[in-house]
Length: 269
Image 1 (spheres, rainbow, N blue to C red):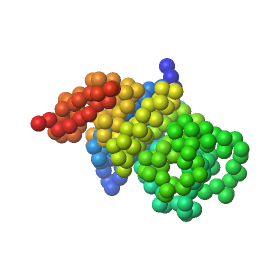
Image 2 (cartoon, rainbow, N blue to C red):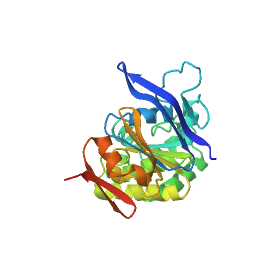
Image 3 (cartoon, rainbow, N blue to C red):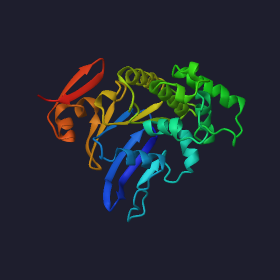
Image 4 (tube, rainbow, N blue to C red):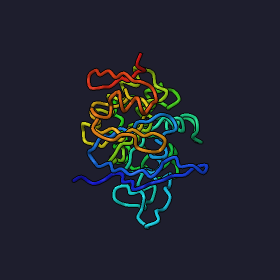
């Protein structure tokens, strides 16, 4: 059996005196491409926070750790970042508008992953190997031409591909996509997810967090439905991406269509 990426054992996270994750138990293993689907407020972002160690679960009364990542319950967060590649709209926005360095080139954004920074390179030693691997990662996602262009000169789709290259440059064991196509138009969303498909086929484990069923690429085999901090359904994609479970998740009757391995949900009429 492959090694577990994430193990939750009765994990509870409380915010504002209420559980946003409530006694969650699940295991995601290497090689098991998984989508976690839920409406806004379901607890998806907090679950990502447990995976990246930006959130902490309540201690269990029996002393067993509620969260393990790659078999460990304690991580230096900087070491963990090299094992997990993260892509999110929030990270993209941080680079574009929140970075103190101002305008950042595509290659600087990618290289900064080695230094655990957000595009700031002057405080760390950038080696030739880092530069070479950055160029390789940009080529992998079809963004080599963006190396010298600044992020604020790119379209949202181009900048998101640079974020994908940044996530891959450390050769992580898993790629975590947290609402990865937020803010992208239809063409850019499709192009981005097709790049993700190629990465999955090359062997990097995907963990996709989304409320858009149509983002679930055909390579995803397991789907977990999350509602109000609890697992509403968990299993093989054909049994979970069905009108019954999705209708219960979103609270409305749902019709589901399939095309080229993708699923499309809409309210039933």
